[in-house]
Length: 250
Image 1: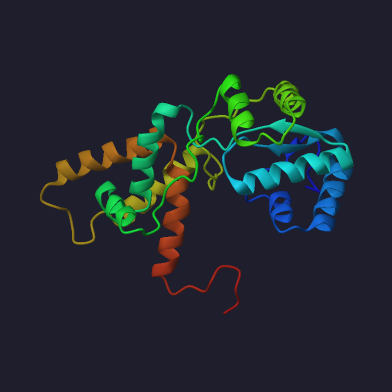
Image 2: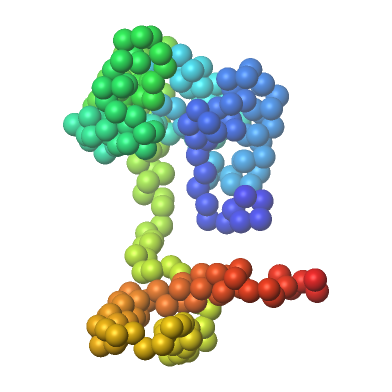
């Protein structure tokens, strides 16, 4: 951040963030130092986050962020720990989590019945809540936070969003270029293919082999991945050789 903070907007983050961890650890001096450093770097582009989730740790973090914001003078925004866009996607998100952790719903249910820990969400408010639900969650789970503070935090969320400059992330394939031109890439891959094309002489099904080669090469070229194949192929060819490690004199 010290090297590349121009035009960045930084929020204090969720449970795992440095500021949240300092608050949960009761490290007041560390939290003060952290906020001061961020403000020195970012000015009013540093925001504290409060969330409406029904967790004791979240209540502690919210209280700490609000107190620090009043002491240091930075703004507070209302955010959510959003894992899915819609509440009705909760079941689908659970299935996805089971797939990623190599569990089945039946095995998970048996573990729960046995009182064992299972992968799952600690809260059911992991979706992108509309503003009215957000206010209800704060009122229900964080009644110690003054309503005026919640109103200001929600308003600041819109202020922050409107301050973000419009940008577009390109969907173009992002692969390193190792050949000078696309034509050079074609020549390299074609040469490699020809070098290993007929290790035992011309195959009996020559035309079928040739047609498959032409088709597969066209796919690689049209998809723009020839440079990727050169990059990987170069490493494989070196690994199979007895050459020294590139850049080494041994």
